[in-house]
Image (cartoon, rainbow, N blue to C red; front, side, top):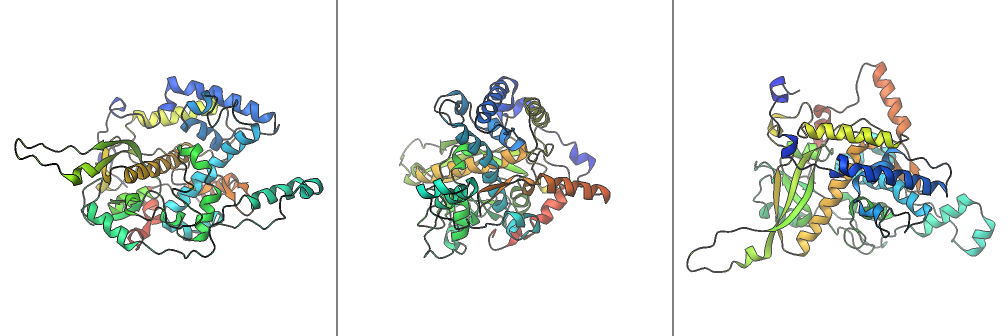
Amino acid sequence: MASSKQSLLPRPKASDIPHPLPSLTEHELGPRLIATTELATEIQTYDREFIMRAEQAALILIVGKREFEHDDGLLSTENWTPPDLKKRLENASPFCKHYMHHLNPDNLKNDAWRHALYRAPIPAPAFTHELICTSDWYTLKQSMWYELRFQTRADLQDLSDPVEEIAKCRKRDKDVCAVTGNRDPVVFWFIPRTWNDTKDHNDATGNLADSSLDVADVIIRGNIIHRKKLGKTHEAWNMMLVDPDLYACLVQGLFAFKFEAIEDIQKPIPLDNYQDDDDDNENVHVVLRFYWMPKLTPRFNQVTTVEDMKTIAREFNAFVALGCPPPNGCPKTLTTLKSGDLVRLLRTRGEEAQKLKSAVKIHWNCILYTALCGGTGLAHFMTGMDQSDGSLQPRDEEYRQEVALDSRLGKTLPRTIGNWLEGAASVFSKTAR
């Protein structure tokens, strides 16, 4: 654990740090609270039992205001039917949980995440007029889910690590951590390697792909996943080098990078014999901002009112007022990293930079969404989806049972840095290398 001296390290004043989520400030929060009530009322005209829950409220807190204020917004009651709105709100959590599941490669072998492993859609009768006339609602839902499933081409071969692209990343970044400058870094993927490395993983991501637009304002079909090609993101533009301790925190969602800008590379102009450097003209910096994530009260699948949303905002803003500090027990190697610090990643102008921008937006919004639900370090308790039938998979009861058990044993849930680092013990696997 960190010493008291370390825990009292000076942090930037809140005013010195751009707010990581401006929608939670007093001026911006009000319209979202109004929109929450309007959305719930609209959806209840279709489903009288609908109740807003924490994971659905989290989506309203992270999207841009235009999504519910403009008639063509993704959460506009003028533009979308109640079933559409309900689906958008409910499917955000499975998408973000899917990101967190694959963010740490160890999660795919972790018993705590076993429930989230992919289960292929159960075969169902074709969705025909005859089926509509003769079948119950459950059969119809299963038929629609199976018919609309994402189908990766069957003859594609599973992928191994892209050795050449990893080498390209190391050469481009001079084999040092992009954040600390330390040597002996490991490779971090903004879009997880296992999102699209096998047919099953590609299908699992594809079945949730529509929510990428709702969560991060990014379309991933065709760009990040493709029916006819695996590994669309298995390229150097999707990778950065980070210190091993930093990597261990990053894959647990303890901090995240927010996209800031794409900027030209500034270079000195000689007074004479000036020659244009084609390499500098082709390259840009993708600028990211570093933020530690808060450990808010876990609210998995919890009924959430407007007052509860105000409480979430207060908790988050209290964290921001402290300068968005690192978690207690942060390793000494990371205590100098401050929220608000800028990181510049070298990419080629145009397609590479734009693709990285999209990947970072998904990365940032999924980790931020998880934090708003109280899922920092506990993302396996978020509501997911059973892809065998498309049903939601709440885990709030499992969370309460674990809390009760730990209470009886005099323990707390594993949210200390020591546990997190142990949970990412294989950072030195060939994937990270």
